[in-house]
Image (cartoon, rainbow, N blue to C red; front, top):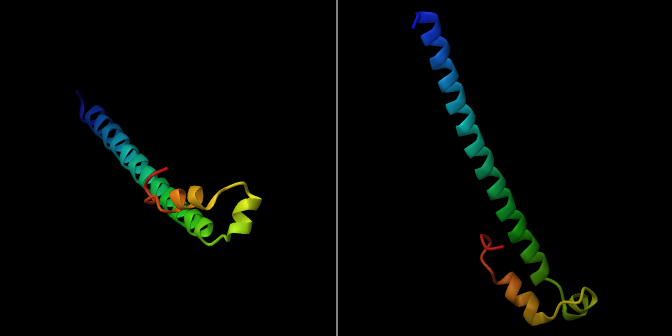
Length: 74
């Protein structure tokens, strides 16, 4: 293999490695955003009074079951 072919092959390999790393970073970022949104949503649910929960058709026990879940569980 010539030097230029070897350099091109190496560049392609490192490019695919960089793309894979970027994909992992992107997935981690999306996961962190999802967890943060879940935590915020559950905090908002926990702050609702019984009348507001009744308006949305959720009992206090259903709401408690949801807002007591850890943020990483859907």
